[in-house]
Amino acid sequence: MKKYKKWWITLGSLLVLCLITYVYWFAIPKYTANKATDKYLTEQEIKPSQIEIREIKKDWKMGGYLTKIVLKDDPDLKYEYSYDKRFKFSYHIFVIAFKDRSSQEENQMKHPPLPGQFDD
Image (tube, rainbow, N blue to C red; front, top):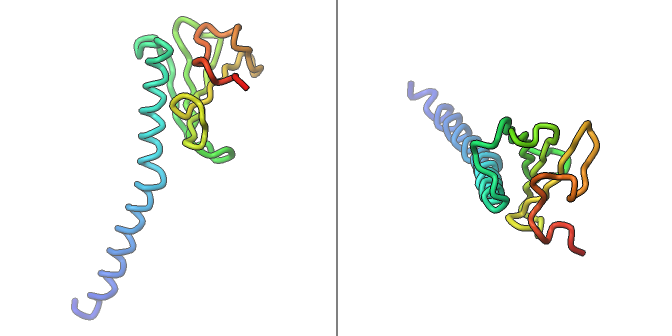
């Protein structure tokens, strides 16, 4: 066993380093994005009981995380909450809604984005 002691220490250290990297680059940002989306939904006065479908995924093209939500009171629209800490919007979230793969204007949404998203 002494013969492989350095090998086991190296392997164990590598596994611990991989775990720390995963937590730092994926788990913590996903948790942060989820919490920011929850706060944003609260500001929009959307209760968890109104949510029919909720999916959160890593947005590999743009960075950050993308949360797709379908609401029970507005089933035709699919809301996308894009979280990126570089955004200067409320809670670092940009909201867009789609109906039949076509984006909707703010006045066509039952739950529009918070004020300030479309201000220039």
